[in-house]
Image (tube, one colour):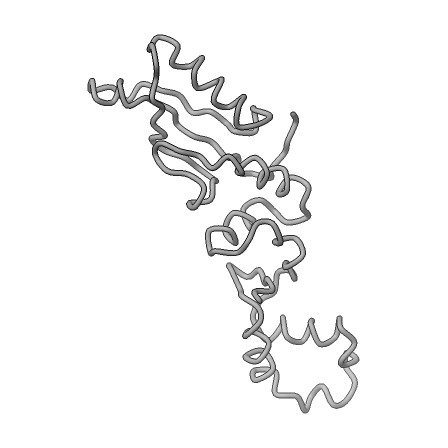
Length: 168
C-alpha cells in the first residue's frame, strides 16, 4: 500500500520485554506506512524478533501516532482506520495528529475542519463572509465588534496551532 503523509511518518521502535529485561534495547524502527494493516505490522514484529520463542513486544518509542492510540505494549487496532482516513483527507497529517491528540474525534475531523487562520478574528470574519451573513468590504462590516464575534463563535469551535475545528 503506497501512502504519502507529508513530512511525517508514523513509526514505532519495536523491542521486546525479554530483551529489555536481559539488558538489551535491541529492536528496530518500523514505519507503519510500510504495512497494510495491523496484522501485517505484527507479522513484521514477529519476523524482527523471530529469535525469541514467544516475543512480548515492547514499543520503546514512537513518532506521529496519537497518544491515545499507543502505549509501550499496545497499539489501537483502529490506528490503521485513522491512517486511511488521514491519507484520504485534505488535512495535513501533522494537523490531523495534533487535533486527535487534543481530543477531537478522528472519525469526524474532515467534516469539522474549517481551515487555517492567523487568529480568531480572521476566522470569524471568514466564517461570516463564507456563510453569506456579510458581504466583504461593504457597510456595516466596519461597525461589527469582531473581537466579540470571535469570542461568541469560539464557543462552538476550537483552535489548534492556527487550525480551526468545529467542536460541538
